[in-house]
Each structure stands twice: as C-alpha cells, then as structure tokens.
Image (cartoon, rainbow, N blue to C red; front, side, top):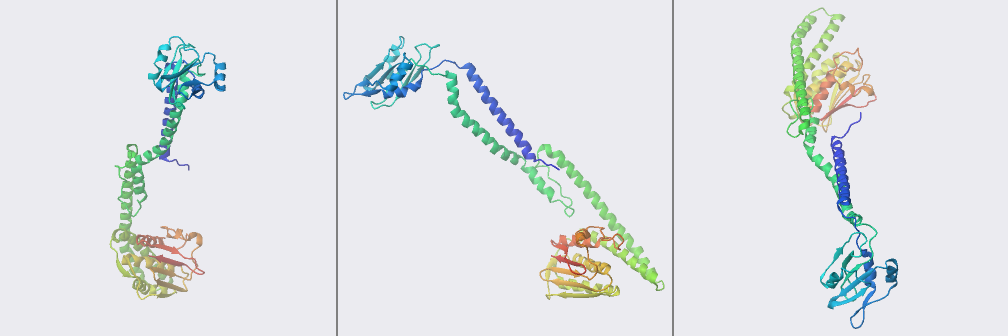
Length: 440
C-alpha cells in the first residue's frame, strides 16, 4: 500500500503556488514597463572612458585633448560625436560642435552633477552629463552625438536583472525552507495526537485522543476515533464480565460433578472422567485468572522468587508424580528479590508447570529453576514445541495440535502477567523437550 505524507501534500502545492505567483508578478512587471515606459534611446555612455583617457593637463594646468586611437575610432563611427569636459577652476576642453539649444546647459556644466536628456527619435539634443575621475581631477563631461543600441526600456530591464534575479532566487529559497517548517508547526498538534494514539492498547483502556491540538479539518476524524474507542472499551468490558460470570457459574457445577465422580467405583472410565473434569475446572480457573489480572494487579511489592518457585513446585509435585513425572527445583541464590504481584506471578509459574505436566509426554523430569538475576525456567523432557510455533503458542486459544487437550489459555495468561511486570517470556531452543524462560 502506497502512503503519502500529509505535510508534503500541503507543502508542494503551496510552494508551487508561490513560485507561480512570483513568476506571474515578474512577467506582469516586465510587460507593464514595456508598455508604459518610453522606447527612446539615451546617449551611449560607453564612450565616457575613451573621452576621459583622451584628456590630460599640461604643466600650466590647462586641459588639453590628446588624439588617441580610441577617440579617432569613435569619430569615424559617429561623425556627430561631441563633448565638453570641465574641471575645477573653470578649466574646460571641447570636442566637436555643441548642438544649438544645448549651449545654455553646457555653460552651466560646472553646476550640474549629472543628467540624462532625451529627445524624440534621433534628435541631436539627446545627451548626458556625467562625472569621471581623471589625472586632472574630477571631470564633468557633457556628451552626445552617439546613441545606445537598445532602447531605454530594454536597458532598464537588463539592469533590473541585477536586483530581480537575486530577489526571485531568495523568494524561492525562502519558500522551500520556510513553508515545510510552517506546515510542520501547524501540524504539531496532530503529531502529538498521533503519539498518544500509538500508546493506546488493551491495557490502557479509557484513554482518548485530545481534540484541542488537532486542526479543525481533522476534528471529525478524531471524534470518530474516540467514539470507536468508546465502543471498543464497552464491548471489551462486557466480554470480560461475561467470561468472569460464566467462569464463576461453572465452578459450582464442576465441583459437584467432581464430587459425584469421586464417589463412583474406581475404574478406568472414572479416572478418565475425573481427568476431563479437572481440565474443565482448570480452564474455568484460567478465565477467572484473566479477570483477576485486569482488576487486582494494582499494587507491586517486594517478593522472593526463590520462595515463590519453591512453593509452586511443592504444591504441584503430587500432580506431577501422579502423572508419571519427577519434579525438581533448583536455584543459584538463597534469595532473589523482585518487585511484583505475588499472586499473579504464582499463577504464571503454575501455568508453566501445569503445561509441562499436560504436554511433557507423561514421563521424565520437570525442572523449575530460579536464577539470578530474576530468571525463572521450567523445562520438561517431552516432544517439545516446533520452532515455527514458538511465538504462536502464546496466543489465546492456540494449540500445537487441534486434538490436544486444554483450551489454549494458560500460556497466553503467562505472557500477559509477565508483560505487565515489564518482563518477557520466551521458549528457548533445547535438545530435548520444551524450555520456557521468564525474564523479569
């Protein structure tokens, strides 16, 4: 199944729209300038360096004109070229003829910093005033007679690239960097809600997703999920109550049936029936254990694993011997203190020993071992559990063979008890039989 990030599904359209708007604004500005701005041409300012290089001052400080090759080339290319250069002290030098109508402006050249005079078409009145440094000091030059190749609008737009292109690049880079961050912050509440949702499990019922931190568009989904959780909690509670009530109701008729069977004459059929009733009583007790575990595992206290395992082994030794086994208990410490629920851990160890008695083949040795640090092992010498079923046997109602006895609840109960103590239970590979290990 292909999944898509909600954040990037928002980010990419936003970046695309921002980029498109930027390009449209740039294109609109370009066509606006081309429409409203004049297409006249200005004097060609590229001649200024050549003009400045042809002016020098003599020993008396007068400005003189040097016929440089560059100046000769300009004159050949533009016969109407003219200029006036003025320096401090009213010193000046002139080249070519100033067009009529510009003499008054040329006379005030010393008082003008710069200027750009444009006339219609190719009029001789088009000219520029500029300032340039030179060996004779700062020169104020007024020139004309040579026009630029491009119109003023084209020239201005070409110069705008220096400002516009970095601005466009900055805008796009800022969009790529800032939009994901802003969207992530906007969806931060949804991320927190997701974290809470991942923490909800069967052992933490009653928890709901907070509706305050999510975007308004996600609120219906959060509300629907909370409603579904409410229904699941209600159904789970009803199911657990039904199982507990059913188990309680079964205990009395099972006990009466067991008493009546014991009163019957000893026979093979009686022993078989007693064994079947015993399994039925054990199943009812396991159902009650599941109910007790949900309601009674509230307080943890310090207990001794050695004493706990020794007690379980002692209680179940008659059952094991009657079924044809030997039962032993060993430990490497006199005392192994742990924090836990004594009743729940006792039921977990008992279920492992009962499982060994039930499926260990009816002969051999069943060992209960308590090892520091906080490890309990129960082993038998039976047929063992196939490697591909070692995870499945901890699922409720799972049996390694369909015709085997038992309801398949014992090992699931062990797993739940151990997990609620923060530990784990596993089946360890063994050369012979089954080897269960609880690590707390």
